[in-house]
Image: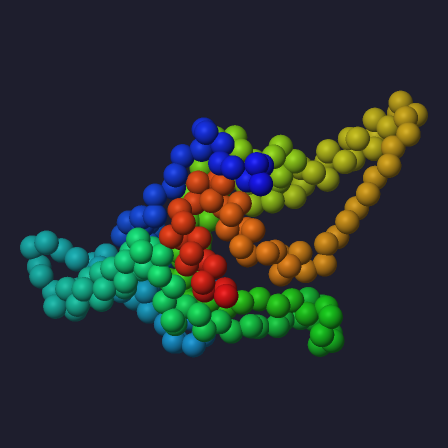
Length: 219
């Protein structure tokens, strides 16, 4: 438990989300992404609102643009309220499991890839707080292990492969004994203990409210 304590150098990540962050995330989100399977709030819904809002001219008021701004503001207000108070919306808790073929033409169960299709705004929340704020905060404070490569800015899957090739080459040239162990953990992401994952996120500065949303939604 002592290793779970937050380092003194790590600061809290505020449980706040700005409308500019929401707009920026939606703008860079490919419309072809599958989201919101239960409510049918396709990403095109948000893209249309943003496109109308982008046509606003101060000297030429337009009723359709005003309505678009009001609708988007309503979406944002609900999301901001949920984040501030740590509330998991009921519609977020309806998730569709989709199974796609890893090997085209092979429909057997064991090689299928299982993915969760979330509501767009919940998925956006995870992307902003985990992929952006938590990862960049951990990078800034140097709290990631040096052996971690996945999902980190500036890191790629090529680097650990190159390092291993160099290690093997050095062992070969120096005639030193070397043991290499490769472990492909089956369904490793599916087996993550959510409560433990959120405790680790708290160690990296994530707010209790955002972790509560994450845990309650998956529960």
